[in-house]
Amino acid sequence: MTTLTANLLAFPQTDGNFGDLSVAASCAFLAGSRLAFEYRVTGRTDLLRLPPVVSPRRTEGLWRHTCFESFVAIGDAEYLEFNFSPSGEWAAYAFAGYRVAAPEPALIAPHIECAVATGGIVLTATIDAAAILAAARSRPVAMNLTAVLETQRGARGYFAAHHPAERPDFHDRRGFVLAVDTRGASS
Image 1 (cartoon, rainbow, N blue to C red):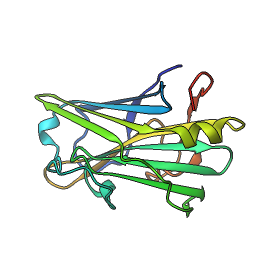
Image 2: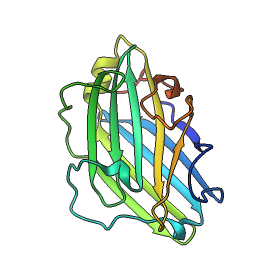
Image 3: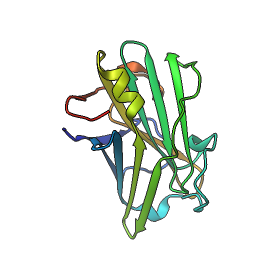
Image 4: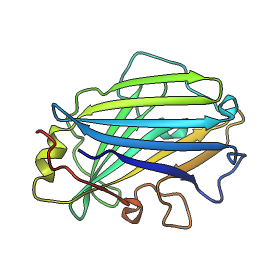
């Protein structure tokens, strides 16, 4: 199974000073129908506001603060959105088309770990991907790995593998540029 990696690009008109930060992301299907994501932020991470660690739970609005996200497209229209916070909170959404909500995916809580050190943040999240693998048997899968970083002053920076539009829009399918090979992944 191939690991997808991407250096995430700051949206050009991002407010605040994010120029000295770099964000890299990766994902890979693991044995047992699991999908693992890793996000690495390096540089002046002391300038970022991180939410306090809480008990893991599903939470809305994580994108308003520092949050790492993955958008997984299955076929031509459907896609899933996963949000992982350094706090341990998470969210998952399903869409039938561009921002057209579908029933929330049944999802076992992801396992999230976040390590913070001088000059670096590493967040890893692992989800049960059995439903993704089952749906992908006959359809292509593509992703966009993304991050929202919030400074201590409240400015937000939007990072993605690709920004296809004039405004940051992680839901824009033209940004799902990472092709996923699910062959060999167990479901």
